[in-house]
Structure formats: C-alpha cells, structure tokens
Amino acid sequence: MTDKDNEKHPSQYATSMGEDFLLFIESLKEFDDYRLPQRAYHIVRLAIRDLILPPGKTILEREMAEVLQMSRTPVREALVRLETEGMVRLIPRRGFIVEPIEREDLKEIYEIVETLDGLAVSLATAKVGEVELDKLESLIVQQEEALEQKDLKKWAALDDQFHHLIIDYADNKRLRTVIDSHSDQLYRARLFTINHRPIPLRSIVEHKAIISCMKAKDSNAAGILMESHRNRARNEILTAVEKIDSNTK
Image (cartoon, rainbow, N blue to C red; front, side):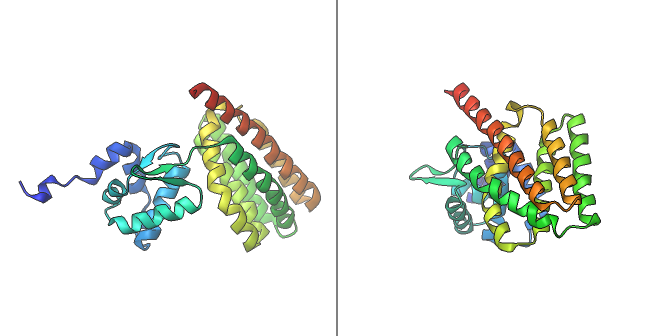
C-alpha cells in the first residue's frame, strides 16, 4: 500500500467536522478564483457565521487544509486573520477553537451597532428614491412569506439583507467598515438564538414603520425607530443567550 493509498479524502475530514461542512464548501463557488488565503478565510468565516462550525468547535489546520484541498500555510493565515476578528481563538496544542457566543460581548457590540444603524438609516433616508424603497419593501414581503413557511433561517438571512441594504444606501464607506466588523457576530447570535426567541412578527412591523419614515423623508424619526428596533432585538437575544447558557450548565 502506497502513501497515496493512506491519504484521507477530504470528505473523511469533513465527517470529523460535520457532514454539513463539506456540502457548505461545495456551495461556495464564488470563491473559487480567490487567492488561497482569501478563499480559506471567506469559507471558514461564513461557516462560523452560519453555525456550520458551531461555537466551541475545534479547527485543526491539517484537517481544514485537507478539506479545502490546499496547504496549511494559507489555512493558518486565514485562521490568524479570523482570530484578530474575534471569530476563533488559538489554543496551544489543540488548534483553533470557534469562539463561544458570550452575552457581555454581544451587549457591547449592540451598544455600538444600535447607534450606527440609526445613523445609517438617517443618512439613507435623505438619499433613497422609489427604486431603493421598493427593494426594501420586497425584502419585507419575502420575510413575511418566510414566517408563513416557518423558515426562520430564511427570515434571518432576509433580515440581514434588509439592514445591509440600508447601510448600502447610506453610502458612507467608513460607517460600513465599522458596522461590517461586527455584522458576522450579530448574525451568528441571531441564528444561535432564533429558536429561543418570540416569532419575529414585531420585527416586520418595525421594518414597515422605518420604511414609512424613509418615504416621508423624516430622517430623525427613521433613526429613532431603527435604534429602538435594534434595542428590542438586543434584549431578546441577550435573554435567549442567558437562557441557553443556564440550560447547558
């Protein structure tokens, strides 16, 4: 038997990290032409963001390199970058571990994002026209359909798109950079707690109210509503995280 015969197929490593991970990789064709460190970074980042690699999961460079079919150097580069962003943590002799979702971390992030999202919608209100507002309203319709189908994960993805679209319409690169630095952590927390929170009907009502203010060109009211919307969501998520933590102890 040759050394080649002893080599593991990537799917065997994917099994140790979760069957869903291999399918997830295969679905991300948009990164195929990226440089290897960038490709590894985006794949692992999105897998953590979407809970394919859940909080507390150990990531070994060797296994990840085999699954991604690249050397360990770009994988380590990607993991080090993710560590600086607070997504993973290096544990000596154990590899990298996906950071847990901590209540205090989320509280601090939401304190920042609430204000910045309020600023974003205020800026966007002065700039949007009918086309942009129609896109936002279309997302709300799709959110309502997702709730009717009891597809909370789809609802969460659409919710993320709604907020990101408003940030796009604010057209402020520095504001986007700051918000983007926290968006993955917030999305991960929303998915993590989604089955432990009330059905998000109020969120849709609040989205509609925000758009009404944007249509009326009332930047101040839109900003206040957005901050209130984010604050309510924060309280629900923090309560859910606390409940999950107490149930696992």
